Image (cartoon, rainbow over all chains, first blue to last red; front, top):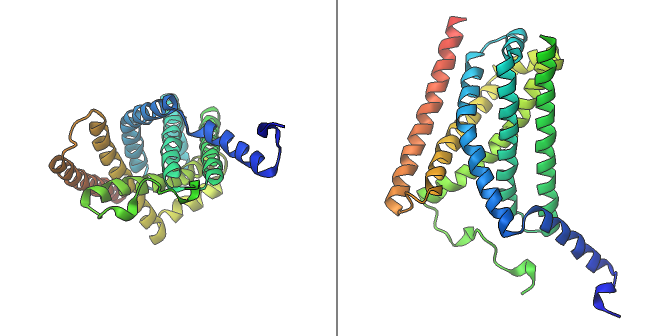
Length: 138
Length: 131
């Protein structure tokens, strides 16, 4: 009987861990793509976030209706959804690197990276829905 | 050696803390803090979209001392991560790696982020005065 056919618990566990490790982190091509994506999103975020923070400051003391009016402007809503998309992509790329460096247990590392990526995606969907609801209500 | 016993990078225990290495680790700390902040930002947007009462209580929370401290911390974290991020983008082009350049750019970055944070708050308070 070959070793590869033994299905004891330890082997299954290692297979499971390696599956997620492979999916989330390894490979020279993946690393290059990650490096580029982090920098392209960073460059895009410089003007997007300066505009966003300036807009938020100018909304200081604003009522809900003022905020909704601002979000409801078509070009603002499109830029906001774009900004949230780039922001959450940048965020999950950065948090992935932090988790890869500081979480040393393989399965915990994999699961936390998957959790971060899922959370970033859910938050992007939530923010986009909130913006679209305001756009179509205004 | 079994995988659990291998020394793992980054080897924080063998480094002497320096101004430049502190500026690097603080980039990560501010990044994680800003990631946490985005959750509240999304809650704020969702509240603006669907729940007026929740939005109003969030708005008054930002006026409390804890709310102001959180905004103060996040605004500095934002400008720090922005300025140090631009420093990282310069490094990505292969420039500014020698020790004196790295120290100078760390100082410039720190003062720029403090100045921008101060300017943002002065602008915010001036707008509050007008209301």
